Figure 1 (tube, one colour):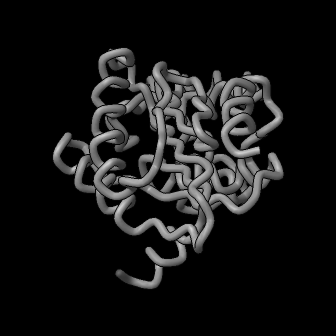
Figure 2 (cartoon, one colour):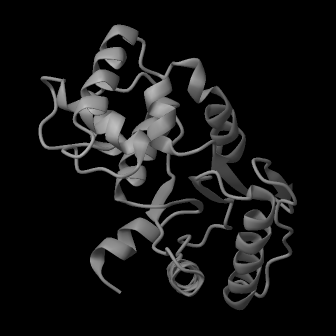
Length: 215
């Protein structure tokens, strides 16, 4: 186990996210909410087998430094998938892999998406962001005139932006207009440079979920 993994997994509060950009975003968001001592760990897995292997690796390398595990949370994009069925699939993987590593835990995972279960002092939950994180960040932008100009630019240059996903394409173009940011086109980079407004109402549901999970 390398140094980065040791540092990331030394915590009794765990937040699992989809990638490096999401990791940067949520580290900044948690700091904004004054929620501390939380390990944000990126999960790999575009396929079920890869996702399962990544979850197994995380659980196997968690070291709570003698403390009892307090929170285990996963946040991911919905990508307009069938959330109900996808939640069941993820929950099943979590329960199977968790049981292998933490045999002595008396636990019960949350039964519904976007809800926190607090059973035997272990908080669990799987939160699906409506559509994706990029889309959520776009909704927080108050400069509607700039967004209109971006829309016109993309419509006229649809083959030149290099992004297939519409939300990623719009957010990348928006970030390219900012003087504070260079060569960064995703939410994590934007939050590190304080371009995203965390106080926007579009983050309210996500904020409430995180506070309930980690406070």
